[in-house]
Length: 407
Ligand code: UD1
Ligand code: MG
Image (cartoon, rainbow, N blue to C red; front, side, top):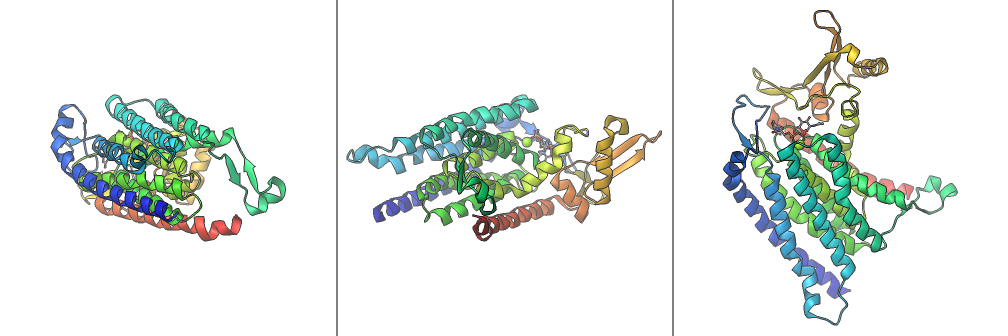
């Protein structure tokens, strides 16, 4: 027991050292490859700035992702290496398979994200591909006798019993987790530093949760999760260094997919696939608020990021304009109600013949701007990241004192 704990501690220390080296590598590599990316056509314009002509290298998540994978491939020798030398103890094939498939899933997603940046994939592929990419991990989960039982909350136990085996539903849930995590981060984006900033806050919260649970009865799973999440944090911090306001690099869908899949993977192998969603509260809200646009109940423009106000040098909510006849009447009724509650900015009777309407793009970023007034881009990112941190604190509150009441 004691020697096992000691071995875990030593390999975590090695993991941290390798991750810090990785951070340096990301920080130095991004400027070095920036021109290469621009020459390959991988660049974007910063839409919230005065001068929009500057080409900013896109898909820099590729650097973070590659450094992350290199660290993980090298680190593999640390927890498993001594089994090669010492043949007395049986080799932990099950854990090894979980570890390798985790990296396979993340690698796949990095590849798909890059493909999306280069080819601009359609929406339906963005939903199908993460599901397929998570299949190998689900298969290993199945073979390793992964549990599919959930603990029933106290009020429902009279009917359902203490635990409930939901079988295949659990696998469907885990596959959907991968789709949700990747897309939820990708659509909560558009201002400098937000994409990797939010991922860093979520990842730090996950790491803290793992550390707390390291003394629990599933310490091994949480230890593996930590080994993945620490290099993820440092390689993201390296990227944030260049992506924060004013951005010198964009993360691209390469990064948002890589980050989302990493969260899904650690949640699955760490056996905390329900708790992880608690760390996504702002993303869940942003997704729900976006539903009318995502499902095209109201028109959805290509970009929904806030609008830059030249004279104030601040960002304000961006607006979508459309014909009232393009929207069904029940939707109009709901929009009017939401406007009364000041949750959306909805105006009717615009245009020459008065049949145009305008609606703010339905993102959490725009809602905050609507409620608090225009903000400077750098400050807005900082506020949204603080919000992310506060929701993590709330998540811990829900997970510990509150959950104890119900479970
Ligand atoms: C998602 C959002 C879209 C948002 C976009 C911005 C949905 C359904 N899609 O699309 O509304 O506008 O992300 O990330 O919600 N950019 C900036 N500043 C930044 C980051 C990005 O100007 O700080 C712009 C750049 O022009 C960059 C482009 O956004 O090239 C990247 O957009 P991309 O990631 O391809 O958009 P989507 O993920 O498809
Ligand atoms: Mg994107």
